[in-house]
Image (cartoon, rainbow, N blue to C red; front, top):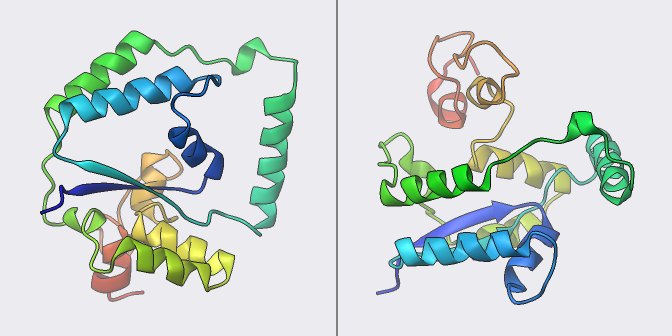
Length: 181
């Protein structure tokens, strides 16, 4: 029997490509290598599967943000106001702590990791439809859609609750349980 797989979806093809080039010397590559080795040492009974999914391609505001991000990445001018200090030691401690105590999924969260349809078929289906719709489907499947539960996590709204039901406004609530949608 194959080991359980952890599926990681990303809309960044470059980030996914960098994981296949672990021996190549690129900026930040040592961090990717350390994370993968640490994960393999602590969770050998899992396999990691990486999937590319369409992002926000074709959405005008996102195209502008991408352009500005590329300009910032290639710019030689660095503002002291935009630098964030990250303690590698703290990141290592958190990774070690998290890998020793994996979260226990509640029934309501288990839909995030269980695929009723094989991921390969999902990707093929997403490739066949318009990018904006594929992006929306991906956001709903990954619980990163602009619903209050997600917007609350990123501090864009003051409450994660549905405005009609006063229950956490998650994808499943929005699509299945809320009678007002």
